[in-house]
Length: 555
Image 1: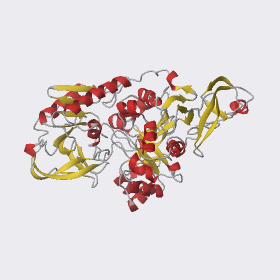
Image 2: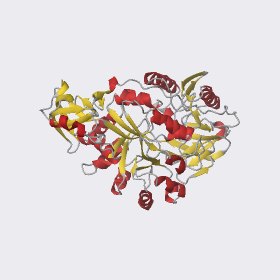
Image 3: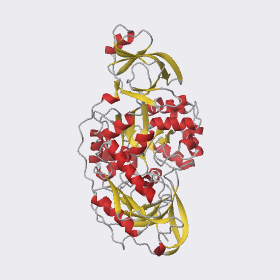
């Protein structure tokens, strides 16, 4: 938060030299969404002024290059990158990001308070300011049993700590609407409370907002986004590995409401971040949809800063942190350099490694009998939706004993509890497209049990076995060969450098392509167990209807 800058007044007045002056830059004014050709002066990691008369101990002529404030991600789960926080920060910083608002509920569902402490420790010394929202739903619903439970009492000990901003996405919509006492206590802990309310509308939306959550990143249609904006919510426009909502939502954003709109990457694997970018990718995607560059940059900077009360950043103005990036052209928005507190992010040294948390894999491979489905007739089938994490609730006439049905793309999907409970759930999915083999992972939101899908029971069991042997990870099976990315931190993240994780993801993609899979099959797979997203899901209990919030049979 901003403090007294009395010691910087002489530099701001020009009676003392600044540490650095960047001359002849096109400086983006986020307050008016215009550009100003001028010089930027910095001292002690803070912007002291804009003007032609500043002197600097170091001076650099930018020759008309563009300066924009450091980019801010309004909602992200670092764990989904498969990278530990310091390595994640190093990767996204290279794309212009200087602040992320992260919700550590993935690792909290596995390791509870220890998971949050691990993520907090990972922010020290990073080139990106990692700020956290406390996970509000551990477990995601009362039905889901993972590795931990965090009530309001457990969360209260984190309130006020450095790096903690507020309460993360409140996913238990039925609990909010029912006035659940424990949820009410959580919402009362802090002032800033993120929401999570896919497809919620009308009077139920009114009641949800009344209870306290005032942002949403789950909108998938223009109509849904417009209603939530009209009711006073902040809109986080999401573009992740599988959650692709920018094209549908940017038409609702105008100069009048852009202050209420930000970008979110939510869930992105490391390979997407490395190759296509982070929030800079969101800016480029919005512009490709006809969105004005200036409004896109506003969404990526001042809008999230104001939503989270971060008045020390989000703009290139006196008294703000010297977080900025250099781009050649705002219409192509290719980041050339990033600066955090006035220092090039390339000069940040790697912080000391934080010891990885135990993977918490306490299970054995299920038997063929445990994943067997029986039944014949009208069957519920999980329907993948391309570019979204919502699913369809489909019905097919089939004989379970004849699965997989490759002609109709009907494959088994299996979840086995990784916390020693021995429970196994089996369902049917449509949309993976596998013709052979299988994939499995210990990343399955939010309980993070082991989940697998494939074109045959033997392949499914082989993939699950590979994950268990690795102590957590992601595995793809083709024939008798298993390709594995071990995830040695809580079964969610790797402690390897980003380039090695990207290489391992490439190997997994090569196998999934051989077996005929869709793009990003592991990300789609990871969300099939998330019971707070409509409509049909799979857990270690079996099928779950995310609309009626109850377990349902396959037949």
